Every structure is written in C-alpha cells, then in structure tokens.
Image (tube, rainbow, N blue to C red; front, side, top):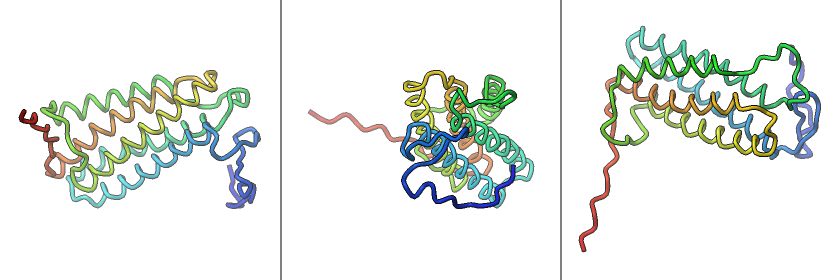
Length: 198
C-alpha cells in the first residue's frame, strides 16, 4: 500500500468512502465504530510513549510494550474489518477472531496473577501510565458499544471485532493495575457512601 496524497477533499461534503468505494455520511454507524477504534489505537500509542519513559524495570517496560505493539496491529485489523462491508471483503482478508481474543485472555490471566484480587472498585489513576490505561479502557468500551450498534443494523458484519474489543477492555483494566504496581503507584479505592442517617 502506498499513500501519495493525504487530503482528498471528498470529506468536505460530510461524506467518506468505505473500503470498496461506497460513499457514506461521516456519522454513519460503521464510521463511528472504526473511528473510535482509531482513537483507541492513538491512546495506546500514548501509553507506549509514557511507558518507555516511566522508569519501570526494563523487563516490565519491554513486556507491556510488546503486548501493546501487538494490540495496535490488532486494532488496525479491527478497523479494516469495520471499514469494509461484508459484500466487499476479499479472499484472504485478515479478520480479528477467536485466536486473537484468546491471546488477550492469556495476557489477562498472566497480569492478574501478579496484581492479585480487588478488594473494592478503584478510581482511575495509578500514575500517568495507569491513567492512560484507564482512558483507553473507557474508549474501548465506547468502541464496543458502537460495534454493537453496527451489528444491530448490519448483523452480517460478524461478531469477531465485538468479542475482541470486549476482552481488550478487560485487558486494559488489568494492565493498568499491573503498570501501577510496577511503578509503585498506589491504587485509590472507591469510597462507598455511608448510609444517610434517618
């Protein structure tokens, strides 16, 4: 693939083209789904930058960076899938599926074992790296909701991307806790409100 021109001016009318050439409004549910996936990918790029500068042990930095590099590539594949109508898919097109989701599950189990069980809900934070993980988690949940909306309108899209995003949000939560622990950042627990006195 070679990109020779960044601007096309076709978006000046509020429309864009899907893979395959179909012109759709920029607020189409399919555009929203892969646009939010792209936003998520950008936040993961920020996590990688801050992780590299975090001062954590080199092996911890390398471990999480390797995972996030794979996830960024996965998200490009998710975006490509969501940007392509089922009728326009081509033979051999890679689509995120069960193997990718199971890889995430393995990482979740690995990191979760290191951080231990939660005693209470935690507030988003955990230093810059942990905070970006929490932001990524919430954007991932939004992407998942938008894919659910797309599936309601176009069920033939398939559920692979939705399952992957669902598991990815779990991974981002656990990875945020793990990163905070590596950096010695405290987890701030949610303070349950006390019952009101009668």
